[in-house]
Image (tube, rainbow, N blue to C red):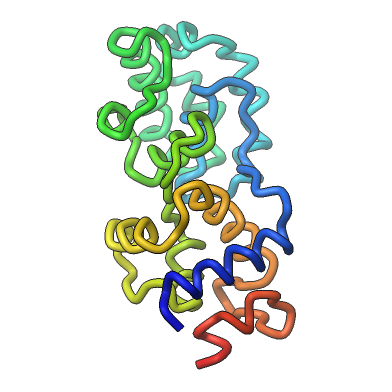
Length: 210
């Protein structure tokens, strides 16, 4: 089965299994998604959602982040790990958003990548979730693992996976597809062992069909 054909079948299966393809991070404001994604690096979304309310209550505006003591941010995000680097990036990003982007989260890849702590994974998530940009492909650990198992790609390189998935995913489906991979990776196609007997995608998955 050609990867593009396989992808269309898998998209349909995942849509049926996970009708709501939502980001699990909670963010009332656009820049809060940017910051919570940074906090989620090497940490679970669940943990980030637990500490985020206190963080955003202490720093309710972009200006308060830009002007606030980094030490206060460190204290509030300590449990997410690598807290010093994360706090530093969040404060620096807040300052840059104000001084260079008129206090708005950029709507394009080039500008997003200028922000401290932002790589292509984060930038694609922002473009897909906030700006609904077609063709946004978020390559996280779930995406890397599952797309290889499914037979959509044959590489562990995130940049190459993003490029390959752009070729075979319909642009208007790509962002939701990546969100559904996260849900599928947590529930069925886990890192330790894929539960193929529970998987609606099994008939179209290379790992199952060989």
